[in-house]
Image 1 (cartoon, rainbow, N blue to C red):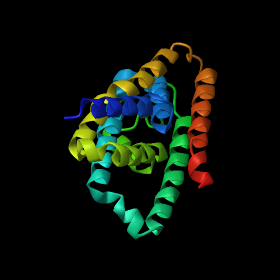
Image 2 (cartoon, one colour; image 1 turned 120 degrees about the vertical axis):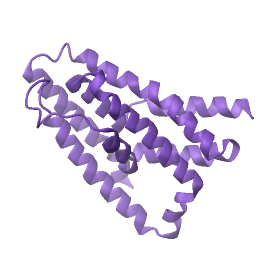
Image 3 (cartoon, helix red, strand yellow; image 1 turned 90 degrees about the vertical axis):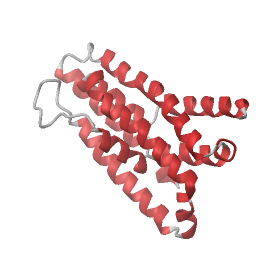
Length: 194
């Protein structure tokens, strides 16, 4: 086993998962609105969902886009529509304890499914598969993603929970949620430019 390659993959994964992006913005908003404990299924959905996506790409799924280019366009459209819907959900999240029907964190399956329409998740997975999978294999790559992503993304949910103390007034919470929604929409810029 090439330990330099594993170290490089670990550093790549850490830098990819700890930096701002759609997943981390949503985790921060979830931590602020629902607390860390209620955000755990969301975090697990991201970590395991993204690792599963990277595994499938490493096993050959990326060839679909080469063989059938309209699939890439379809993925981009689905990505934009779903992220706009999520931004709307974040912007209109209810305060903790207010209106349970309006305020629920993403479930494990919703977060795992989100990886398939998250442009940053695709970029991370495609880059990792191209650079690291030939030396590590698909299964080790996916395992490293789970091991590195979970603590990296948990920081964002924890930060959101810490912000919760400052977001005690409905006005501040609303401003925070709208800011997170706008940032989520702004994260679509690279996709829209293509």
